[in-house]
Image 1 (spheres, rainbow over the protein chains, first blue to last red):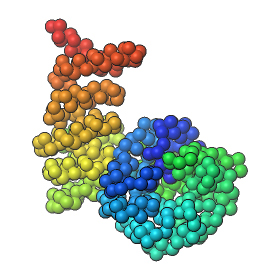
Image 2 (image 1 turned 90 degrees about the horizontal axis):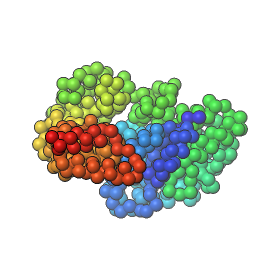
Image 3 (image 1 turned 180 degrees about the vertical axis):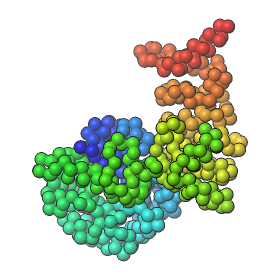
Image 4 (image 1 turned 120 degrees about the vertical axis):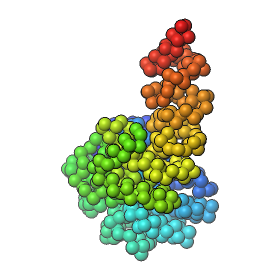
Length: 283
Length: 198
């Protein structure tokens, strides 16, 4: 089983996690920029964080045989702090970098006017830099937040196929499927989504445009729950090809739309998906 | 690799016309350099070149863009705002550019990182501008990080008693811990000790 975790906050994880992930088939990850538990108070803190996501963290991952890419953004929670607004001015410089495969995490936390503004501005940046967008859905008032998210995405003019709406569950999956956006699911030990529940959703909605991630961070989470979900799929009668589609080819296809995904050193056979060429620049 | 070697590398890839356009733009408008420098990797190629260890066509193109830019202050900005590959390209370019001491803070920064590629690049030919104490720390850091000492430019010329004293002290610590010294560091130490006996 080869696994591409399309959403994991490796900055908060240890080298032991990298070892265990590599040993269990995780060969590629995308780390979205998000909040760090402790609120930041200036754009400079974000610049150092973004530098780390494009410098130290991919290097650290490579020591364990894991390919690391990032998505960058001002996250919804910190968009509410006026001291962090300058992050929006930093982003254009960063969104040109090779390691950036989407704008994200953007979206809603508490659905405030400041979040509206940051969300819309960053969807515009995604269009301008021809990048996909990774959209977080709120933990509180999730169903309403997801509907509002889809309205904002539609109004922005970005193609729905370039948008992944994340942290979905049984209640929020249907409208996202109807919108044409990709559906993301964060498999957690207790909360957001579990492997058995994920299997039921895949049975009902199919494997197309489905992204399964661990969203592991500094909270109670587990970077191997992607692998666990793959095993649960097999136990429920899905084929190895179904598992490969959900856990490898789908994230390759979604982030490959950036034209920047480079998986040439993961030692995996090249995907049939030719859109962004995982061998980009190989010539 | 000198600029002609780099030119030959880029001439062999489909993106060579992109680079020619980018160089012309940078000469006409130096402020346009940042996004071109960032995109050079994916435009020219990010795969390792089998016959040029440590290089890609994208990195070669970046150095050529810096040569076209010929601007020490903007070159430093590209380093400070660069991802790891962009910073590496700046470090590789330093000895090929007419940049004076403007690159010293960049090389010193690279030596403070824990990225073996950046540390190694900072000890290339441009390291002749680093002060001896910084340079010695860089060499000993290579031994710690397992970076082959062959990356260090003019190692034999510059190795002095202070450096070999630091290596000998490290060898004693390693021996006490039952750990090995890398063979290249031991060889350097032995050559220096023999020289002292002459």
